[in-house]
Image (tube, rainbow, N blue to C red; front, side):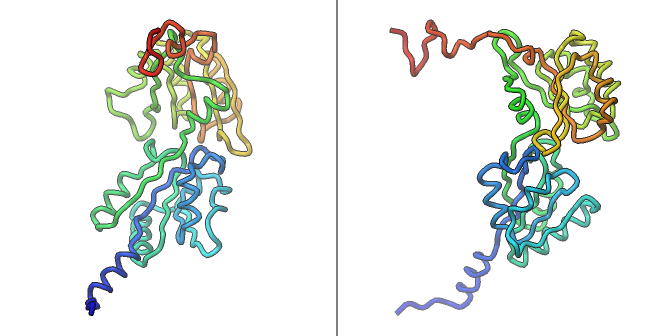
Length: 268
């Protein structure tokens, strides 16, 4: 005879109803650029709390019909956190949907800290970043042998500022492939700073709403960066990709060179 205590059954039942709050990166915009895991989490969602000012609405069509959807563009952190806690404690699959990649300018850290204080588990699902989608749209590699081997992700200081050691002057001094987010409102200042470190004909990709239905991408010389941005009245959802790699060229890596041996292709 097996005896199972009612308290054990109740604990197991509660355990089964406890789902982590899932932070999902939606990628740059297009629904087919979601990761498979992100799409799965959306299809499982009972509650979707999403950044409606930045996420392409087509992505939210993946949630089931019963899913409660809550927009956060008009909410503060103090209003979002209670929603996450309340719905999770009711046993719902809660998806917190952010634009782009969760690791980059997503503001998930402050939310995860608050959930941790409430002893609520979280799961994080990364997303494709706009710099990756932009390079792909241009059929470009950003690390060309003999040209550039470093990618820097950064932003202009703006209203919220950056640490002194990360000011644009320092980032640009590397001469690397420089991907600038959240900088369109400051494009004149940005261009002036970049011209101190890059030749004025350095290619700059200007990508607005990359992978959205109304995507607009162009490549211009650095000296034209501000004028073109202002002509298009770009102030948000715009990425600048500054890189000598965008010139293209036929430089090849050592990896596939016949005189380069390695573990899987030893010297004969």
